[in-house]
Image 1: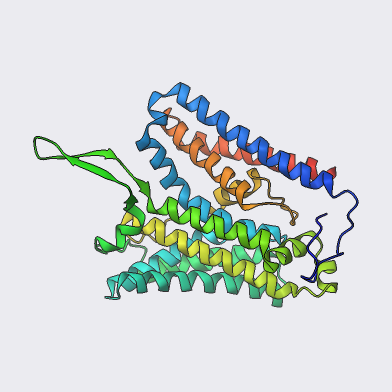
Image 2: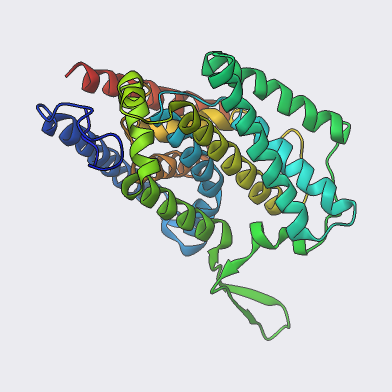
Length: 346
């Protein structure tokens, strides 16, 4: 078990004996995930010389941003001992609402803000159903998964919302330090694709989430609830509010991921985000998060997200079908969960 800081209502919750081994096991899991990531990069670079080109590297960053954002939100929920199966559908609903608001004439920032509000509200509903109605997180979020997807399809008539304008696509397609030169024939040539805005956004969110979880009282409460909910309650932690906040964060980040994805497409697609929740859960588990709660980190989830992103990118470049990719990632997830079970037994 973990030991939490004094003065935050969780000091003394857990015995200090045996602290070293879980912390060491958690670190070893992250190191092993990092070694796996490096091994994948080396293997795919050997198989295809184009893998390490700047264009492909920026493409991997862009593709990983959405899964990374969803993974951060799911990590917070998993740390409390819960699960959120609705993030893929909430992504679609939030992005669709943002697109509809912009299509109706609202400025792009306000339309995207509306999408974020919708995502946060979906997360809060999940939290309320779980804490107030005492419904298991798996069932509650499964219900929200169907509700959000149905709302997205109903609002759009199952059709994409297009003609959203160039400004709507700036967040998803813009890049920092992009260099384009004009050739002698007058046509532009990409010298350096730049660092995608979604990758910069992912970095900012990951750093802030890691700071909150490791340095703020709320983060210690998240770990306390996942490690031992009853002990956390007896020590003065408001367990219901902590869980509600965790699911609201997951919903907010799902909404943010939806806006980033729809901005990339410059079209609001109500059918987007299918199975994204599984990739996000896989990223968290591969990175060392325990489905039992109380163990995990944002840095580990980022490593897991890049493992999935690089796997998909490398297998695509190798000509492997999407169906085989699903099989490979499924096997990786099963292996990660098995390792987590071995760690819990110890």
